Amino acid sequence: MDSKKIRVAITHGDTNGIGYELIFKAFSEPEMLEYCTPIIYGSPKVAAYYRKAMNLPAQFSIIQKAEDAEDGRINLLPAVDEDVKVDMGMPTLESGAAAIKALDRAMTDYRDELFDVLVTAPVSLLNAQIEGFQFKGHKEYIETCLGEGAKGLSILCGRDLRIASVTGKTPLKDVPAAITQELIIEKVKQMHTSLKRDFMITNPRIAVLALNPSNNGEESCGTEEAEIIIPAIDQLAEQKIQAFGPYPADEFFGNGYFVEFDGIMAMYHDQATTPFHSLYTEDGVLFTAGMPLVHTAADTTPCYSITGCNEADATSFRHAICLALDAFCNREDYDEAYENPLPKLYHEKRDESEKVRFSIPKKKG
Image (tube, rainbow, N blue to C red; front, top):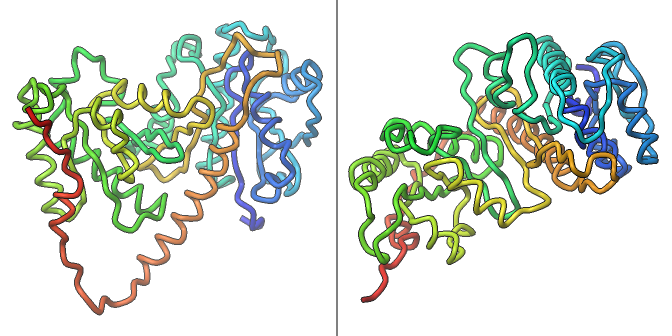
């Protein structure tokens, strides 16, 4: 691409939600346009509607194709029908379909290498469907579009916390059966690679949470820890991956142990999201690791109840854009370094004291 600035594709999300408010507020900071060139996949009509309704000082240029995007301005590319109806704060099939159409157009342009990273505005799974297709999430949609067995890992990112889960959106009743040594190893290795390549952490430390609660700080109440999780951690150690645990989640977060680690692998969805949302209410970011396309999103819903009220906080959306830019640059630097590595003049020695340092002491009876 001719432009030296990173091109950021931004999909407008549910057109009856806070998507446009987040976008316009994020780029109300003048320096944002110095960092990147945004291409909004959306609707000029809907954008103008929200700008007027909330009296937002947003200026955008309408372009017909991504190649026409110019630096120093908000570029808006029509990706949906202009007759789309706006019902602020009301989840409708039309507003959900508009979100999917924008994402579909963006992914078509990505295949043609017309932008570098993707940031998505909020979508509701309840109404995001089109012509029988049910939207299951941005990660799953991107996996389908990329094909070739692409599998992403959703990582919630905050200032002092990066956390993912082994079983993702698997229903809670099915989690115990879904957890295997192979799956734990696969997900931890995926996080390990992302921490090195996307976040530039040289030798990341990853905490693995227990599935079951501990019995008064002693043995686990179940068998999965001894039979599945600990053997998986041991295998990861043999592959020189610094994985520690398993840690009972209540003690781990209650005592603040999470700040000692670069990444945390929970066993199931709510075990990851509950502590994260209690710590980061306004500035959390969802990062999709493990795929060729860098994708981020603000950790929020369409927030229909405040749509049009000019009350949405754009901090997390701004952070999502910045994280996408950082990850893209980090990947380029990492890949370049590993394409032409310098010869090693020494061999690293494994430090067994790390196991002791990151062990949680048992409670005294």
